[in-house]
Amino acid sequence: MTERMTTTEIFDGIRFPGFMHTSESLRAACSLQFQDTDILLVTFPKSGTTWMQQILSLIFCEGDLWPIHHLPNWARVPWIEHVSFSSFLSNLNASWPRLFTSHINARGLAPALMKSKARVVYMARNPKDVLVSYYHFHRIAGFLPNPGSFEEFVDEFLEGTGFFGSWFDHVKGWLGLQKDLNLIFITYEELKQEPRPTIQKLSEFLGRTLGPKEVDTILEHCSFSFMSESNMVNYSLLGKEIMDQSQSKFLRKGVVGSWKEHFTPELDKRFNAVYQSEMGDSGLCLPWHMD
Ligand code: A3P
Image 1 (cartoon, rainbow, N blue to C red):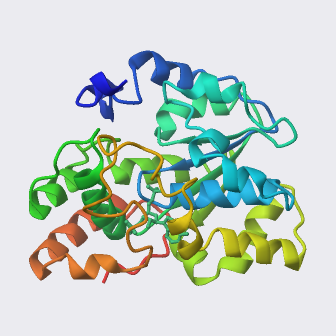
Image 2 (cartoon, rainbow, N blue to C red; image 1 turned 135 degrees about the vertical axis):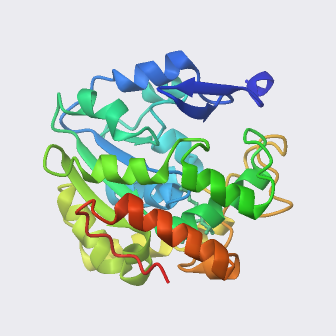
């Protein structure tokens, strides 16, 4: 697929990297037959997808850490829209529920999801931190264009014309379906600030009761330090042409609020104005401090 490294796939008006997406793979994801026991993690990129993939694997491995040490995240909790999905689907751990990931928006996936009782874990993060993380990711990912200046990148993010579409539409679309789907909303910030109760709340939603020792094991193996060193989740298995981590690491900072080092007061004002007009009357209760 490296010949598609610079190809852009446009699906439902949204740009996807052609490296791992084709129109067929995206269409197949939107018509996937979900089973009632399936668990789908949905995120806008850079919201903590890999972190949650690790947590979901840990919740279901019941103390058997072999998959954590030997299988990459994309094989344990594969993206349903990737061209590689069918090869991972046939090799999923049969004693776990099927764990899937997606970045597709609600409009694309809801019709298929509504035909089942599959559980959805929607994870979101303060968009200013998402934007900064995404900017650095564009610098290292061979399948995404060079981001240009930070100011240009902010404009594209606010217009919603970047890869994977608009953050605002993604969050509003998925959270707008809370009553229609079996969905739990988890934020990067709560996981960071209160990891133990957040993991307990999540596992209860997923139908697993965890003892305190099991939670200890999960906390250890989903920590930023453990994951930074683990080849199974730090993307070091990928060639330099796909991800060049000599400039910036995939697990870059792993903190809340690093946007403050990047935003000028003028950019911040521009961002807040768009945030307010997009989210202000959405009726959603979002936990972020925008200042
Ligand atoms: P930063 O670039 O701000 O460090 P995704 O997996 O959706 O692409 O998100 C990547 C972001 O999640 C990166 O953010 C990465 O460092 C952060 N992340 C991954 N694992 C983490 C962990 N265990 N704790 C905190 N942040 C984590």
